[in-house]
Amino acid sequence: MNERAIFLKELRGETIGTVSSNSSSDEVFQNQVIRPILKLQNDLFIASFKNYISKYKNDFYNQSTEKKLAQIENAIQKDIKYRNALKGMVIGLFTSDEYLDYIKNSSSLNKRMMSMLTERLKSQIDSFEKA
Image (cartoon, rainbow, N blue to C red; front, side, top):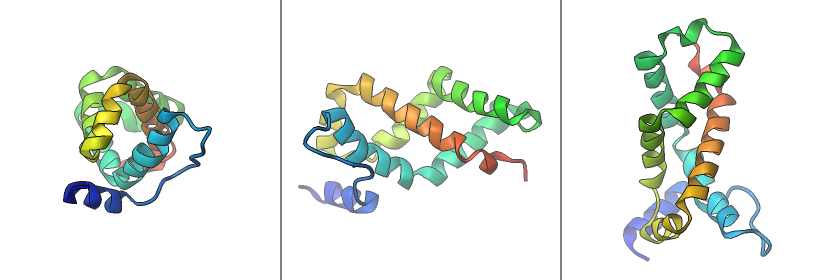
């Protein structure tokens, strides 16, 4: 294992969630790679969404909580440019071997990644209140 891979794995920390012999390869990748990266990058995701709000959704702060949650979901699901930027923030912390595993089933893993990220941001809706 090269120095970068060792550094990234130490930086991300332990597996989050359960991995068993019955786990699918997507579940294993999700719990060993994606979840730790999402946790590590949480502050960056919050800063990124605050920037997204300021550039594209100035009315965000005047919306009901329900509409704010819908806007978070829409931003991640429908704004391809923003979605790709978020994916880059995650994929950039993959090791070379993890990237090779990722590209084998990137469509399914992208869905998992974006779904978890959407829920993560929605659960922190208070972070997006205007200061």
